[in-house]
Image (cartoon, rainbow, N blue to C red):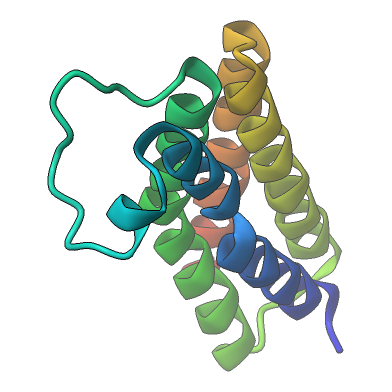
Length: 131
């Protein structure tokens, strides 16, 4: 299997579990009854710093993942995989992991750097569809 597809599969697996840290924080903050409810806001309780950051990191991944999916699938369909797309897709995945972790621990500078590099890698993949 092409490394671009492996990158997509790996990030998909990460995507499937990236909600877990924030949900653990919600469980600690709001309790089991809230977890199994329709999840209305709880007055007087706010999500802890790390859990809130994990939730925002997961939301950011949700916002940015579709463009990566489209890029990899379209590159595959148009038979445009090459060494540079392999590097870009692996870089994207590594930076998205770095972004999630740095977001969760509150390292703003690392988070911004990982986000910027991942964005450039994804834009590169999208451009390669056309050239």
